[in-house]
Length: 119
Length: 107
Image (tube, rainbow over all chains, first blue to last red; front, side, top):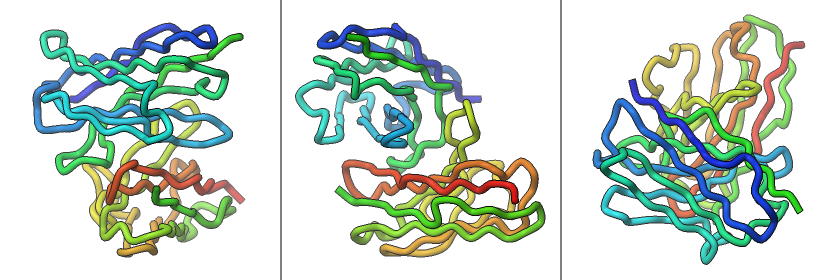
């Protein structure tokens, strides 16, 4: 059974960096799946943030380019998100998720973590 | 970026009724569209991938159809556990995008 679990601070100061990690069990981070981040707010709904392959290849939503870094930690079987220069608009529930083979659609999700950006 | 527009925003139905949800893309995504169900406090759950394929463990009452820009999710006979919010998502191009959701509520 594949499981994903997000972890990280629930509160980040404005202009700081949001850092989250997603621990994967039941599958290898080096498998043929892409690993994704999605966030959700009541105002904007679900927003795909980006994805990473174990090789280090990435794709991001254009609106976050320049602020986002994705990385993979193979020994720990986890992947991470860093979002810099955060504002209140980055307050959201953040999910990590695995994409189906072929990419794009997300078959396993973490439970989500609420990150609040405070001023 | 491809915009997905879902309709209606809310669908008020009773158990046993048929639900028909629509997702329209601003440009063709081929068959690269999926549907998710989300209940309060939970992550989305993949129901349908690539327009018409049920994901693992999804009951047969859920079906998807469409291609290009127009897609439909049908729940043939609503069970009590089906009252939730449903989202479509495209994987035809980057960035991946989601629709704004359709809430299926109990009448």
